[in-house]
Amino acid sequence: MSKVIRNIKGTFDILPVNVSSDAAHEDTIWTWQYIEKNIRDILELSGFKEIRTPLLEPTELIARGIGQLTDIVSKEMYAFEREGTHYVLRPEVTAPVMRAYLQHHLAQQGGIQKLYYFGPCFRAERPQKGRYRQFHQFGCELIGTDSVYADVEVIATMMHVYSAFNLPNMKLLINSLGDETSRPRYKEALRSYFSKYESDLTETSKTRLEKNPLRILDTKVEKERVLLESAPKLIDYIDSDSKDQYVQLKGLLTEMGIEYVEDPFLVRGLDYYTKTAFELVSDDLGAQSALGGGGRYDLLSMEVGSKSPVPAVGFASGIERLLIALREAGTEIPEESPMDVFVVGLGEEAQKWSMLMAQKMREAKVKASYDLRGKSMKVQMKEAHRLRSQFVVIVGEDELTSKKAIVKNMETGDQQEVHFNDLVDYFTPSVAAP
Ligand code: AMP
Image 1 (cartoon, rainbow, N blue to C red):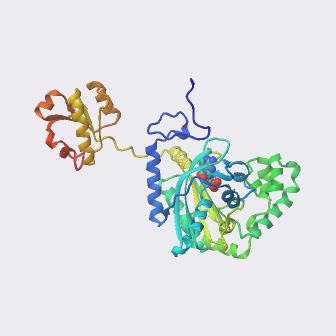
Image 2: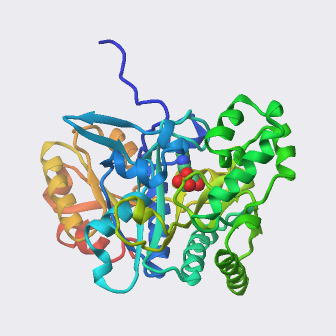
Image 3: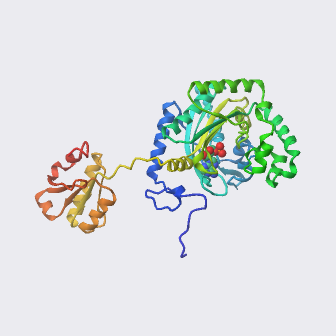
């Protein structure tokens, strides 16, 4: 075979160096690690604990959890069957977390569960900027209470993450979806409203009108957006309990200093939401404007087999979209810490010595490397530069005899001789000290 096999379209490699011409994927693994660490620290500050669930889940969990009529389940699942078992590569993590909560009886631990996750998700979408087939989500799930304070806790935690990155031009959209009786009522109202204009609708919307009229609310077609202006609003169809909670939520968000915009057409693409729904959007993202979103999902547990409802609320965010927004905003990510020491060994004996010295330094927590290939001084110095090493230690035959190495500070160019016995101490505890 003469052609190198390439990755699947809509998926990508995250490399230690930036070689990509694709702006969406030019972030190195260092940037990912930096972002993930910062997010993790913030989520833990609010008392959320990490949960890791498998990438493979039973198809039934996702189909029943998210809803048969959603885009995700009807056309975006990577699903397959093997020896009678139906598998799906998870398209999101909320249903898997609820499965784990129920399966392991986490309710019996007492109190509420505050869980967070990181990891890849898979959706067979048409790839474009901000939309991939394998993408990475982080999110929180707060399980075990219907208190509106839990909704605020989840929204505030999500906002804490994004404000820590100082992203401009963000907008938090909120809405209430009401209880399980509200949505069918609202769907009917939408259906009868749009039926009057059926001839003006696109083919996609005509199908949606029949199957799931809520999806028409996502339309980007100008003519349909005009129709939307006079369409029935969900808030007028929700139960009074949900309405009261929505008012309370808005009051608490204001107390927390969290600005929001009410969006009467925000319904979100997953069927399991009830009551609070929210989305954080950014003007800097283009067509795929949602950084993250979530809501209350008090009915999901019943869908996936619980005998009684387990109230819960959560959010999910895309890491790729956060990275795009950071780049658009020109946010500087601190540079990766460089190599502390590169040991340059000239000749076979010196190479062996370098191997042992690098090992001793690593044991003393000094980040050290040395030449594995037996190259010339020039090539080894080039390698030290490439690794942005702060110091080089140079040893040849003469140094092996005198037991004194040449230590060069790569920033200042200063050089000095240091006895082999003092070398490790020279670079510890702080490499910058000498
Ligand atoms: P959702 O589960 O659809 O509400 O998605 C939650 C978040 O995940 C979105 O706001 C996006 O940031 C991200 N996301 C969803 N689908 C994709 C995708 N195909 N590619 C990249 N990010 C995505």
